[in-house]
Every structure is written in structure tokens, then in C-alpha cells.
Length: 101
Length: 183
Figure (cartoon, rainbow over the protein chains, first blue to last red):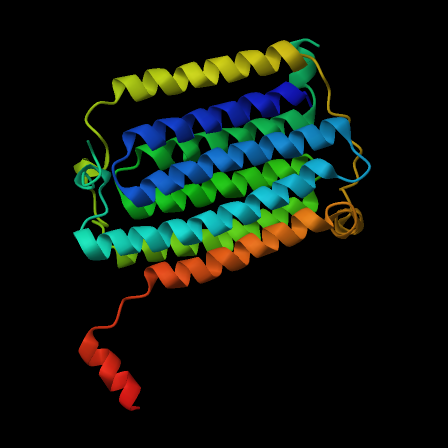
């Protein structure tokens, strides 16, 4: 296996996440796109760990940290979405123009 | 290494199958017209990623991914979709109207990152050891050298837990507060 095949796959996944982040209007779908990008980063970390083979499995440890932080981010993110929906009756980012200049 | 050499290794066939699944489902996550479908396509993408981790002999991380993402995060997302009473049927209004610039930008991001990866690690090989990274090693590393980051991450999780409850909780009306105080 080449290292770059994993890196290119992760780059494609990350680019899809960027596309979703820019094009989606529903907040839940934007969070889904962010998850895609974080997964792409995890693939990179684990691939580099297999390539370098560190004595302490550092790449895999960092992948676990990223997964944990992503879980926390989803929890907080969905709580905020819930609050926004309760106040504005919408989960659409185009409707959230209160702070727009 | 020529393409013929590359394709002759069975592990690369497995990579093509799993990687293709990840790419197709990942693409459907950002293009699906149905919210629930998008969340379920993300399950496919994440399961494929777990398969890639197994291919990279990262067994523990693969099952953590399945457990945390597919087991918990997706369920949370589905809850979020249901609770916000988002249109669960087909909906044309999920995407912004201007799609050309995001598409160009994301393709540019892909080309740049892929070019940089191939340029730097073009023919670097991952030596397949055949044995997965032992959970022993990960545990010792996590509670040895990385014990302080581990504690910090656990604190972040605690803060997220309390923050999530605080943000999502509905404020009581004065009448309800009186009622609760009386009990």
C-alpha cells in the first residue's frame, strides 16, 4: 500500500466536507459536513501512524482525541441548533440574519 | 512502482472497494435531498473509514470510531433532525442556489492537497506488519506519556456535557417556577 493513496482519499473526503459546508443551508447538514472533514483528518493521522510506526502509537492516540472532541462538538452544536430552532422556528442559516451587518 | 504492480496486490483491491464506498457515500452526504438520508449516508462513509483503519492495522481506533460515531453521534444527529422538525421528506431548499463557486473552491482544495501529498510522499510505502497495533500499547501510551492531554479531553467532555444540558434546557416560566418551589 502506498501512503499517498490514503492521503488523496482523505483530501477528497475533506474537499467534499468543504463543499457541503459552503452549499448546505440547514444547520444539521452543515454539522454533518464538519464530521466528514474531521473523519478525513483521522484517516490522515492513522495512515501516517502506519507509515512512521511510532513506539507509542501517537497517530492513533491523536485520532482518538479527535474523535472525542468531535463527539463533544456535536453535542454542543446540536444543543445550540435546538435553542436556535426554539427561538426562531427555523434551522436554516439564511434565516439567522440577526447579527448580519 | 507501476500501476500493474500496485493493482496486483490484493490489499489494494480491498482499498479500492472500501475507498470507493467512502467516496460515493461521502458525496451523497453533501448532495442528498433528504436530511435523514444524508445522516444515513454518513454512516456508510464512517463504516468505510473504520474499514480503512482496519486495513491500516489500527484495530482499536476502528472500533472506537464505530462505537462513538455510528453508535452515538449519528443517533444524536437523527434526534436533532427529528426534534428540529426539519422537513424529513425530499426538500429542494436544503442547498444554497449558488453552487458553482463552492464546487470550484472544493475542487481547488482537493487538487492542492492531493498534489502536495503526492509530491511529498509519492512512492512512500506503508509496510504491512500483519499484526494490528495492540490495545495494550495504546492503553499504556494513553495513560503514560499522554495522560495530561487525556485528562484535558475528559474535562472538555465534561464541559460539553454540562454546556449541552444548560443550553438545551428550556427556561421555566414564572408560574412553573412557583409550582416547582411549592413541591
